[in-house]
Every structure is written in C-alpha cells, then in structure tokens.
Image (tube, rainbow, N blue to C red; front, side, top):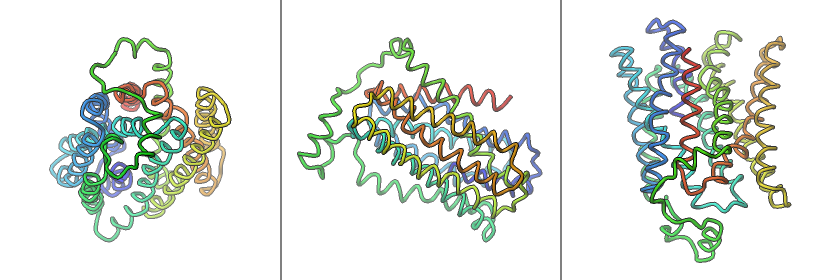
Length: 354
C-alpha cells in the first residue's frame, strides 16, 4: 500500500507543483535508490539477528517516511527525493527478512504455496492502495493517502511484536508435532559467516540475478506507471485509473496461489524441483511478454485493461519460479536472495534513469 500510493498521488501532485514528466520519473525512481542500499544489509541482519526484528524495523521505518512525504514535498523537490529514498531503505529489508523467516518455517514440500500466499499479500496491498487512494484524494486531498497508509504500520507492528517469531523453536503456541514437521524439513545451523566467494561462483546464483532483472524490469515499471498510462493514454480520470489498476494486481494475487498449488502438486507427484521451477518461470516470462506486446494492437481501453490483467496474472507464476528458487539453492542465507534483488535492481535503476 505504501509503495503504490505515490503512483496515484503523483497525478494531482504533479499538477499542483508543475512537475514535468522527467521530474515525475525522477520521483518515481528515487524510491529504488534507498531500496537498493539495504537489500544486502537486510539479508545479513536477518541471518544474524532473525527476520522478525529486521522486518519489524523495516515497516516502522518506511511507515514514518510515508507519513513525512507530504511535508517533504511542500519543502522542496530535493527533500521529497530524499524522503522517498528513505522509504526505500525501510522496504529494502522486507524481502530478505521474509525469505529468511519462510526458509526457517516452511518445509520444501509446501514452499511454493507458502511463498505465493505471503507474496500475494503484497498484491492485495497494491489492490487496496490503488482502490482507496483515489477516494481519499477526492475527499481529503492527496496528503491524506500518505497519512492514512503510513499510520497503519503502527497497528501492524503491535500485532507483529506479539505474534511473530523468527524461528519455530521460539513459538510457544506450536505443538511438538508441528515443530517436528517443520524442523524435519529445515535442518540448518545458525549462520556464523557468509561464503561470498562460493555464492558468487555458482551459475545458478547468476541465473537468478538475470531472472530478477528481467522480472523487475516489467513489474516495477507497471507498478509505478500504470495509473499514468490509464490517465494520459487511455484518458481515464483519476478515480477510474485507480480502480482499473486494481484488476491486474488482484489477478496476480489469485494466480500466484494457483501457481503455488500447481508447483507443489507437481513436486509431490515426483517432478524434480528444478524442472518445476523452470516450468513456472517460463510461464512467468512468456505470458507477460505475449500479452504486453498485444497492447500495441488493441483498439479499446477494455482490451488494454484485459491485456494488463492477463500479463500480471501470468507474471505471478514467478512466485513459484525464481522467488521460490532462492530457498531451494540457499535456504541458510537470506543474504543470498538479497544479493539477487540488489544486482537486478541496480541494473534496472541504471536503465530506468537513462
């Protein structure tokens, strides 16, 4: 929610502050400056002190940055860019912390479904943010979006502190049978050192980095620019742009879980994990490639929205492909997945700014 609200709020903000498209692009990309900085650091922290503390810190940090965004915008563009980068710093630790927690809690036989379920929460957050942002802006102004969504982080943090645990061994509510099941599929000792040279010498690691780059290129561009495309190209108004942006992310939430179920079912039937990951990722790449290329041929807004939804729906199969593969090849090292994100984001950010 905190990430997508800017993609809607940027429309009235650019009108109020007279920002040109180049400035809008700079603001949209500034989030990734900070997001890049804490990817690897977040993985190291999660490996050392546990995912619960790292993710809790990240949410509090980015919630505060979200609330302060309207103040920064009114002070001046440099302050807004810094604040958006600060928000990225907080969100940068989320992915490695989540992967760290899931690698400790989820046996490999349930990994695709669990990862898809957790990540579908991000898509539902996008749905909620895109649906409610136009309403809040219409009734209370664009600042209200940042105040409202940023404040929700404090509620989440209170629940997180009382209910979450980095390791199954730390959860007093788990039964002995549950702990035995979980730990039987996740035998790993605490991380004392990170074998960087060994990690970076492996072809699968670089294959994941390249896969992340290809995935992030499309996903983050659509995440930040879809409302602008609907508004300026398809000529929808602000409310219509926000509501129609909901459909692709809702489709992702549904298809991510369908893909996770299919992947775990195939593994249970005897397919190799490598084969299943390749099948899921092929769908996750070829599907969006096909549907996005159709945008240049469609003649109606309804078909354009349908292509967007189909593109994002097939993109969600990546959750059972490259995203699950992190834990397959490096379950002990959240920092390994962080490195994949960081490298792919660095290349994406360089190309986006060019």
